[in-house]
Amino acid sequence: MSNHVRILLTAAAIMLLGGCATSRSVVSVNAPAAYSAATSTSGVAVKIAKVEDAREFESKPKEPFIPSLSDGDIKNSATTSRAIARKRNGYGQALGDVLLPEGQSVASIMGDATAAAFREAGYRVLTPNDPGYAQAAAVDVKIKQYWSWFRPGFWSVTLTCIAEVEVKAPIAGLETGITANARTEDHMQVVVESDWQKIAGKGLGDLTADLTRKLPRQTASQ
Image (cartoon, rainbow, N blue to C red; front, side, top):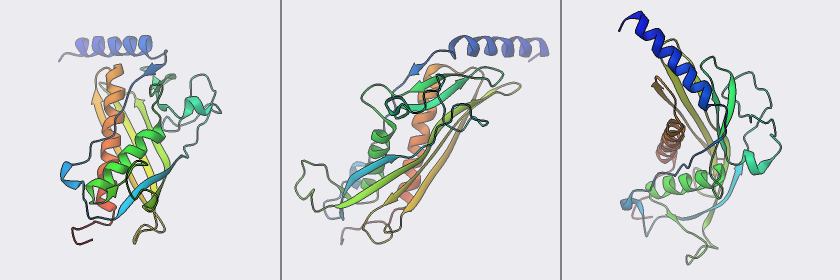
């Protein structure tokens, strides 16, 4: 590819990013489905009791991985609870937000992801309508990080998603809590709205996989 063509592509990417990145976008993200083979009938019964969104937002962060909002309203939990990314233009300037849709929150998708991880590890994850729900071990989830951001490059741009949760339960190996985390990246020429959905979903899937690996495994005898 000639330098002339590269310059044109870079200029086009900057123009496109600058044009679409100023507005707020809404995308849905779904937790990975648990493997059907992991729906144990004999593993320890658990319930997702509490999911705390402990992410800290800043009005004008010095680093793009720190959650923020374009309107600066970081005290509005109705918005921060759904915020998953901040868009930027080709020069790295922070612009519009990326939110989950109404009815979905970072806490809700993290709760679903945690349930999926426990099921894959052989636990019985009960819902309020299931028999034995009241007696099931209560799982508490603390969301420390879940954010995606854009980093400009000379010939391409990078989307990154970081995720981290702490999980505690009155179960052997989980009494003091375990931490699962993930860092997911993708490289492209131009960032479009579906790319934010893709990177956030991939980050959530990678976090679920890491939590599954770290959970004490359940066996049929349990």
